[in-house]
Length: 226
Image (tube, rainbow, N blue to C red; front, side, top):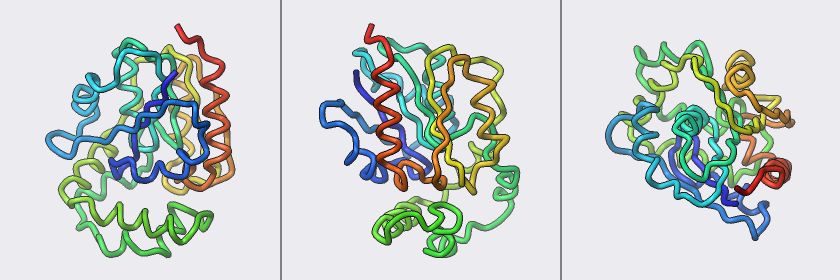
């Protein structure tokens, strides 16, 4: 069984480092990156990723921004998909203030401040090294790309279709970026959802990598291979 990782808003695999260090070496992991070209609408991103998933059995993990993307991919019932993991994610708009960002200038320098990153994203629960990596990931995103992804988030509505596959939600108890309502959207849209609430901030895979790795491996072990 493979584990296919889809990243958060940064779109790269860089922030998966802490989790990868705690996963069992025998687990085959494939970390995909999001396209930086063209439409950032979830349906279009899913269409471009379908051909990269492969056919051998796998579990799809969508972190934060990529939770709705994992859901879109799962609705296609691609060959080999056995289950979906949502890490600190959602299926509806994560915060009611997101639409306002369309009408405001993006304060790039402010988004990269360690104090704000620790307060809203990390809750002071990670190392200075990881804070620096996160800041660099935010700063390297082109403004137009960042706006496009934030726009996709602002347009999210709770899906009408239900996901009928085994699913796991790693819920961050101290998430300051995703509302409880948005977190709960997974419960109503996934018919076979297991929810595990972990102490930690929105960047749960980075702040609690061992607990997340243990939960992921238990979930995968409980799935049929064929």
